[in-house]
Image 1: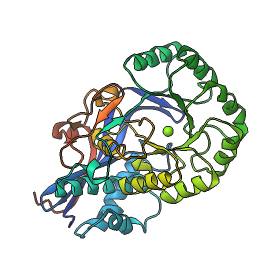
Image 2: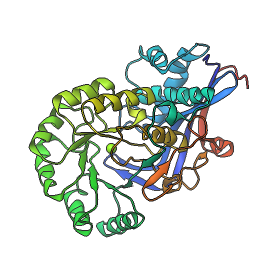
Image 3: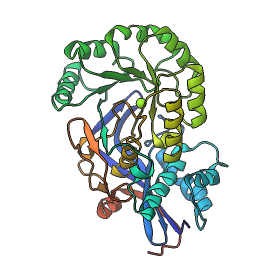
Length: 372
Ligand code: MG
């Protein structure tokens, strides 16, 4: 396909309540949406590393500028016949995986629409129905958390994930475990600890957690491997897993027994699929994580979650869990207890609500000539 036109949007999507993690509190999700056109057909992509460079070295305003000034100009008026070709055209720019992912995911939606296929089918997904979990950030009290977890259990969620940070760690998990002895439960540390904190993780072993997500530094593998040898609970990598190469090294060093794959963090849908396959060959089960994207980004995640090696409930949420109204429609909803179902429409199956997109856009830029 020839890429005729790219429009980039830096948006701010207000949350219903703050999202509190080891990185701080977010009240809005700043995100970058990309519209890519070829011959009158339009695809949408999204990537958000959030507003500040805390989750990774990237941040939404930086992603916007990089896509506008460096990445999109490398694609405009070019014939891009495969996702691998798109990745190769961007490979000269170091890192900046979220920025690359915004374009890569738009290309996949566009490609799926050009071929008339739903994205999940184009990616080789095995089933339209995806198992999703419930996720709870730091709350005002343990009682409030236990009530919220109880609500998720009552609604039929098959696993619950808790944020875990100093002052909101062992005691919280012990209380939740004691209230819900059978629940599939795991914690996400968002890289808030160091290897010298290993006693915290040894103390988690008797609590029967499904996994401990990213306990140590955001770019570490070796200390994770050392920690994994000290504890029984499987470690899952999130922040550290930024590329297929890192996935291979994580497997070789024994740094993790699960992978959380976020298309933004790894540079797009193309590389996410590659990592899922690398993991499958090493018998490492995966699941898909999210960054509280709009339904655009979450629908790409949903398509990825249909792959056969996604074997643990993913972090993909109904739109109304975090937003009063989603920037895109149709909004994502649960299709059953702890499950969501991908669209049968060509592409990702949703597109922005134009009015809401205009209202939530902070800045926007066009590359190339619109030919619709
Ligand atoms: Mg995580």
